[in-house]
Length: 238
Image (cartoon, helix red, strand yellow):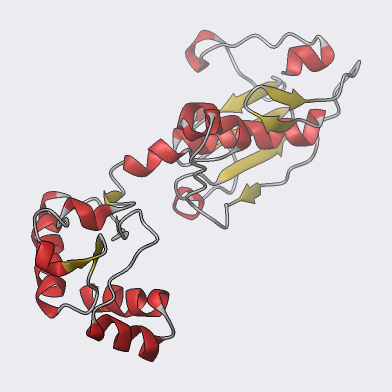
């Protein structure tokens, strides 16, 4: 993008391939040794999974994240500031055309997304690799080590076919105590096998129907509707 914007061709080299001194003009991308030796005030713990860091120190620019995807987002952050880069879709981007590029003084610039998982479920941006240009995590990234179960995951534990007595209208009966205890124990027993998982999302069946037994009707009336009853159920499982 730098070349397409300004016709400036920046050679890509590894640290060991060149001699670097205080007058060297460098764009350092990632957790390089040059970054480690610099005065850059970077905290990888603060950046988390996809926070970004950009700093300018003399003739050197440092672009990095705590993880590779954070470094990718940091590159786009840098491009946004110096060439007006904007991504509107996977295959639709804009950037300024210019004869020269003026470097911005980022001064230990750090950006951490307010929403960690930004995962649309349609089109090209469902693919995390395609979604990077938009600084989205991509839907498929939900299936990484962070997630134990997700989406309509109650059906991974019990279904209307395996436990018809715990369902009504194709949906779990959220007032059935036996079903609550069974699902809670299933999650408890699953957690040790996935110790790195931080999130366990117990999603309902993919239907607009719900159980209409007397107990569910009473719970819905007490807790403000089906959503309130579901939240009560989730709190019990937790």
